[in-house]
Amino acid sequence: MSRTTSLPPDATAARDWVRILAAYRDPDIRRSSFELAITVAGFVTLWVAAWFAVQVSWPLAVALGIVNGGFLVRLFAIQHDCGHGSFFTNRHLSDWTGRILGIVTLTPYDVWRRTHALHHSHAGNLDRRGIGDVHTLTLAEYRALSPFQAFMYRVYRHPLVMFGLGPTWLFFVQNRLPLGLMTAGRSYWVSAMVTNLAIAAALVLIVWFGGWLALACVFFPPTLVAASAGVWLFYVQHQFETTHWEQDPDWQLHEAALHGSSHYDLPLVLRWMTANIGIHHVHHLYSRIPFYRLPDVLRDHRELVEVSRMTLRESLKCASLDLWDADSNRLISFRQAHAA
Image 1: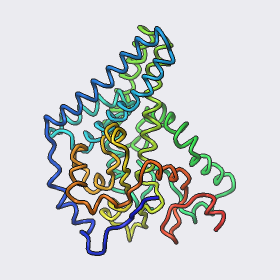
Image 2: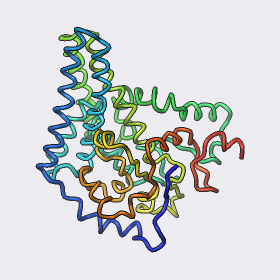
Image 3: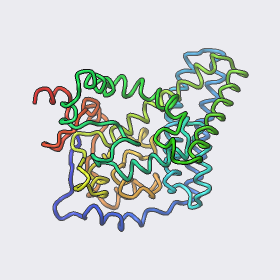
């Protein structure tokens, strides 16, 4: 699994990294604008190409859409940086960029920004699970379930559900309501409903001008690919064998950020498509760092490179991890749980 799970004994303490990483926090408006422009250009170009291709060959349109899923993931990653206020120095510009991108990514920006902030503030805390994370039970909690409850949890954690049906449910159904914030204020309802109306208008226009085949072959492929890829990325960023979970009295924010988030060392093309989100331990330590400056951190502070590092091949094993074993401080599989 991850190759190294902790820093050397004489290394910088997790909380002290905040001061060090502050040097990387300032976004460059020219670089941010370029990254946004090139990503939008790539997404629009492939989308238009698929639109024309569907008139000639629907398999070609689907293939172009699948590739375009990578650009959609990157747009979501930029929306993610906007939510952290790390993409532009102007907060209003960041927020409105995120809101517009939220229509394309099927994610109401203000709702997501709030739930994601809760994720950052609670990640790795066993007593504050529930919003913005992957539902994870401890071994003791699993053993206390009824047979039906245990079966349903196993269904939920199955890879076909987690990375197949789950993303479709999340982006097409769950995101349509401000779940988790239903009574938190009017702004979250406005965010969800306005985003829904904009998405509905876009879908009507696609069908009006291109027909149902355009909807099926141009809109759905990149959306489904990006949804599954996004859920997978979020999953492996925290659901790896040597991740970090603690009960509330022992939980420390910076320890959880550093040791409960992975360094997903992806090939160069995938690193670009995912906007360096695999450097997740650094992101959780200091979320105001723009994604294009995260590699600079690893270049300047080599001791962070091997912390919870995993390759693409190694990450595939994470899909079989399902329960937190507090005795061994490991995520374990159902097989290991039953063997124990």
